[in-house]
Structure formats: structure tokens, C-alpha cells
Length: 111
Image 1 (cartoon, one colour):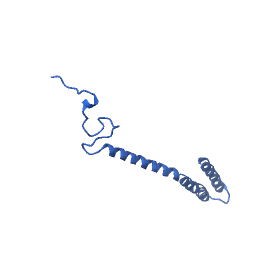
Image 2: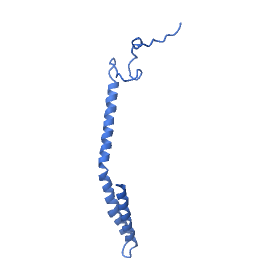
Image 3: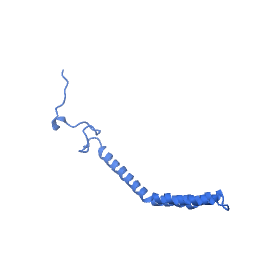
Image 4: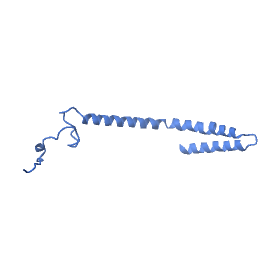
């Protein structure tokens, strides 16, 4: 797509240069030629051809935001509710579970 854009702008630039150097042309006419035959149509074409890509990017961003919201909602439950099973022990807001149940002995200070 960019090759077509570059080629079209090159042709429009050559048309504008021809307009400016012609004995019947003007620099103002060359500028108008470049904008009306070059930048305006190419800008419109690039904008319209990029619409599906922008739509996909927006939808992917919305899906990511929804996934983050769902994961944070599952992690931050009310007090006393069990946290997600795949979370690390210190990741939640709740106190650590009983260490004897997991096979890890508690560490005690010597008197």
C-alpha cells in the first residue's frame, strides 16, 4: 500500500513542479495542484484503508481491559472469601492459610 502512496505523491509532485515552471503556470497553482491531486486523495485513501486496522486494535484493547477487569475482580473478593487457586500465597489481601495443612512448619523464635 505504501508503494502506491509514494508513487502517487511522486507523480503529484512532478505535476506541481511542471505547473510551477511552466510559463503559463504559477507557484500558487502548483501548491493547489499538489494538495488537490496529491495530499488530499492520498490522505483520504490511507485513512480509509487503515480503518480496519484501527478497529482491530481498538477491539483488542477493549478485550484486554475486560480481561484485566475480570482477573482483578476475581482476585479482590470480600474478606473471608477464598482467593483464586492459581495466585501466589502472599498475593491476595487475606491472611496466609494454615501452614500445617500445606506441610510447612511455622518458624518460632527461641526464648
